[in-house]
Length: 386
Image 1 (spheres, rainbow, N blue to C red):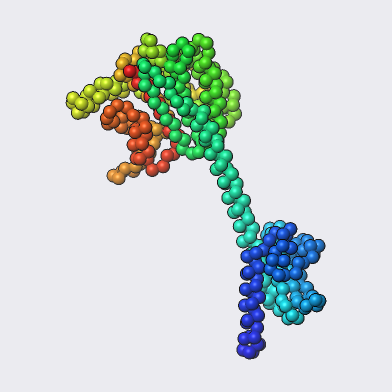
Image 2 (cartoon, helix red, strand yellow):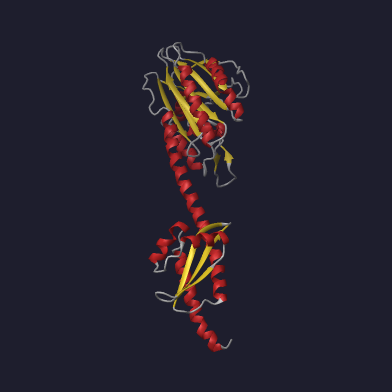
């Protein structure tokens, strides 16, 4: 081919390629190809012919004479043996399509089919993701509503509690319940794992716990644990899950605290008045918390839960603190060393540095500020005897 022939052919090739790209941008699924053709001024191809082309995966070249001559090239866009669109190109007049032009168009059509298929897959994934986010937002609100939104205003004690899931929903929970006989029940639980499975067990555990606590006669904490384990054990074992739970009953008239622990972190008890007095007079805090170490196995480990209940008497100014492991296992950032777990010793150090009394909201703010990523649900609850 001489230079003159090449120069004559080049504009036609560019015109064909430009037309191809423009039409690819407006390609439609097979059932919508008629509307696309009309919008582009392209004669609508026969629907039966389109079905045949998508089944055979072969391009079709048609020559039309009336009312005005043109040639029409129909190329099915196939990806993984599934039609994703049909490309229709036409040339006015009697100019024929060169074989190399058709091969070029078919080659580009293969890439376009893959791109369109991937784009549709991305759109489906995005739609499913948005739907999942919306559903999780509703689930988070429902789970939040399961927890106590308001706390009892009591003259004898001050109660604080917060729960922050690591994801949209989580397995941590707390409960505050004042029995008609006057006993104050406190609980913090942690379902193993995260996400939806843990959240479902969390909801079940709260419902069963409230049923147990609402009995006419205030039960013993270790008996409540046994009943909870009996109700939840089969489902927990089948799901390979367990629940750690600390449950305490405080009687304001006698200031007696009875608790049962199912594999949960040790509760802390200390004198807030003595702590603040030392800080004001000495400047150095020597007060150490008491760890309540009576404990049994988590719920769902054994068919029958057995453990003794712990008992002590609180004094005015004493604080009982219950937390989940999302607090004590928080990985704190440091400019001088690698990330380290807070642990209960570090938690006590932060508490002893607080001024103006115990404030769980401020305490959590300090922990979250020192933590780059919250890796686990964080729950904390306190009872201060007034």
